[in-house]
Image (cartoon, rainbow, N blue to C red):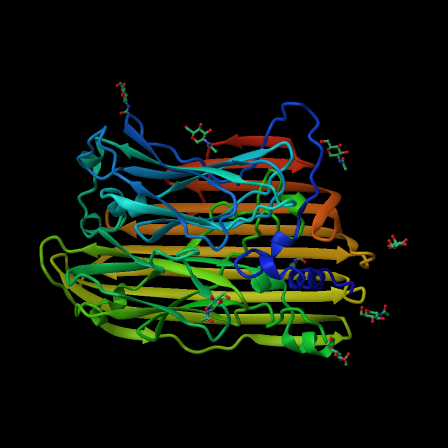
Length: 586
Ligand SMILES: *[C@@H]1O[C@H](CO)[C@@H](O)[C@H](O)[C@H]1NC(C)=O
Ligand SMILES: *[C@@H]1O[C@H](CO)[C@@H](O)[C@H](O)[C@H]1NC(C)=O
Ligand SMILES: *[C@@H]1O[C@H](CO)[C@@H](O)[C@H](O)[C@H]1NC(C)=O
Ligand SMILES: *[C@@H]1O[C@H](CO)[C@@H](O)[C@H](O)[C@H]1NC(C)=O
Ligand SMILES: *[C@@H]1O[C@H](CO)[C@@H](O)[C@H](O)[C@H]1NC(C)=O
Ligand SMILES: *[C@@H]1O[C@H](CO)[C@@H](O)[C@H](O)[C@H]1NC(C)=O
Ligand SMILES: *[C@@H]1O[C@H](CO)[C@@H](O)[C@H](O)[C@H]1NC(C)=O
Ligand SMILES: *[C@@H]1O[C@H](CO)[C@@H](O)[C@H](O)[C@H]1NC(C)=O
Ligand SMILES: *[C@@H]1O[C@H](CO)[C@@H](O)[C@H](O)[C@H]1NC(C)=O
């Protein structure tokens, strides 16, 4: 067998004890290097992102919520601890900033492990561990969790599921601390804009978060497992009768047969070549339904975990989003009229074309009317036309090309009447997908060139005036080249080139102001690795990343590159370029 991607699949089938629930990239971890010095210095891994800046002159309370050594934790219950709101700085107002900090050290040899952090059943972080070295590693993830403020004011169970296996070969134990930092800005209340949109909760955290996840106790993550394209995982929920706005936030990660879904060839290619590897083509879509109606979809960003493709590429600069996976918001306010009856309703998560396994769950963020005990609403218009991705296949034997394209639009409009007036909300999604896949050299070379464009937005208006609008335009370009040698005696080599981009423009506006931000985050990585069994025995990886964030609230820039674990160049700053590019919003 000489096709690189298929070779990974073959290995998977040889490792039944480590199957489902782990990234396929677990198949590749490094041969233990000799530690050069008696007191080795750990390597610090990081994901490039902009730092979180606390408000000036704010009071700060930190709580270490959980400390645990994750050794043999696979198929065990999540590790839990009790979060108590800090009493030592007696907050009277909600925090103006809340930050979750996950920090970890590890030494030895271990695979990348997916993990989740839940507070009161609501997921607040989906992440992947870094793969350790003999000399040790350390990393930390900071995430702004201000949108979950309503959970932070009461005692809650914090749960972490990180399924790890420790044996004679895979020795790495993840030592983990989870802390929550709250910042109280005493001047914030005075500064608060007195606009109708602000009064109606736009730009403020929800009053209530309803988790759409599996409840404890269980011996796994609280996420739902979607195993195939027919599997719809459902959860029932009830919303308070005085809800006037609702946004569903979805967490998604893909593993095993679908870890590299964007490189899966169509079934016709698999069967024509009699291969025993996953297919279903390269298009995937996470569907979200409410009482059976599709309310939104997710065409996900192609996160590459820290052991993915060639683990040497992600040391110490890890893949875009790998330490803090992106989440996706679906505004379900137009549908509120259908669920304000105090009865149980059902959310369903599915994956179009999905293979084993996707981890999906969500949080329903709800804004409640403090001045009335009930609200009423109705759906006015809803369009979610069916669609089918197009596929043009050309292949002979193991060589060929596949062009997959898809486009869809979803739009819903509905009104809700509350003490804020009768607000009509439109939510839309517009998505475009193109994937060009090529096999050459009798299947030994695979090239994938994929672009997802995913825009969505909310418009809220009173009968005569626009109240608030938000538009987000996301673009996820991916280019992947892999070329492998023939496998001899359980050994092969692989050359890989990866280009991974995450671009986002965000515009939000109301009558008295607007904010705008643009992010361009582009990673290029190249490397060669030598593999024996499932151990990388040698090779070299280099990575370059340019991150540029510009916004009406401030800017951040970083240009960093590494090779063979060493940072070659690292430049960062927070000056804005002159043109913030408002004109290029569309
Ligand atoms: C291509 O690969 C297949 C499967 O590994 C092998 O049977 C065939 O002989 C190869 N063809 C050439 C031209 O190398
Ligand atoms: C912060 O406090 C210091 C003195 O306590 C004051 O000089 C400064 O202006 C304050 N900064 C802001 C942004 O309010
Ligand atoms: C966790 O916190 C303890 C106590 O502050 C500290 O000694 C330890 O080094 C921390 N570990 C990590 C991985 O941050
Ligand atoms: C999905 O797979 C998991 C693990 O094999 C299994 O526990 C679960 O029952 C499966 N779910 C469905 C709906 O088949
Ligand atoms: C396809 O693979 C199966 C199982 O490996 C084998 O039994 C069968 O002979 C193969 N068929 C062809 C046409 O190569
Ligand atoms: C990827 O495909 C697009 C067309 O969809 C093309 O413009 C672009 O140049 C390709 N990128 C690479 C690296 O080949
Ligand atoms: C493969 O392994 C066999 C037995 O260990 C050995 O004789 C042979 O030389 C090896 N071949 C290569 C190309 O390394
Ligand atoms: C990033 O740094 C590299 C190396 O110094 C340089 O060649 C490149 O032009 C820089 N890119 C940007 C966008 O500044
Ligand atoms: C990578 O760095 C190590 C020392 O950390 C060195 O021994 C090795 O030769 C380097 N590899 C390459 C290909 O430069």
